[in-house]
Image 1 (cartoon, rainbow, N blue to C red):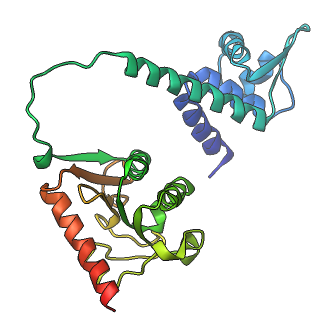
Image 2 (tube, helix red, strand yellow; image 1 turned 180 degrees about the vertical axis):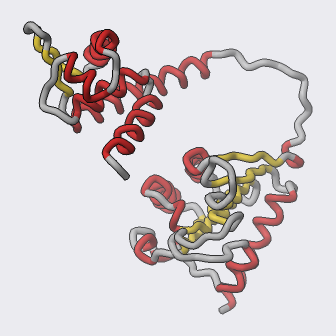
Length: 273
């Protein structure tokens, strides 16, 4: 990737944190030099000079840029670690504000009947699916069964699994494609499914997620025998998400029953072997 492409990529990511295009471009430009005047920032960033002052002023208010009030003014970006920490705190503060506002809204009554056992929901994007997986583990009361490819096992998921194990839940875990991933997990909760079992569960290829075909299962989670989540890899499909999943709840829900029976069969076979 060229320097220009890297810069464009960072600009897009900064926009996701609330910076406008010119602000993000100016910050990236300043991060490439020790300090710069408005004219120099304009030359590096391709931001019109007349817009640089407004953009840098916003960055100063956000704590991302320091200003030396000389003639002409000189600007510099704060240190990288400091900038990341500033963005993180701002982002977490905004998320907390959204959470508090949503929690304060009175629930609406729409007169729907409870059909939980017949409902199946879809969720897209690895980040959203990971968050849902971790929430399921956090709310578990009794049993936690997880089979997951290493490609979707980040430190947060492993932390959630360890926490579930520490709560003395009946926990059985299989992580595919990376033996090192299981080393931090308690030995008594880890099992190794047979190849036949993996094929039956939909894990067609394993190996740390490097060779997963389209629509291959990436994770299978069953919690308390009444909730299930099944994720599939979509990186080779012409859509903009890396993973999709179905989620269902209810002891008689067909998706829950299917997932529960598949994993229960494997665990029974393991016990008999």
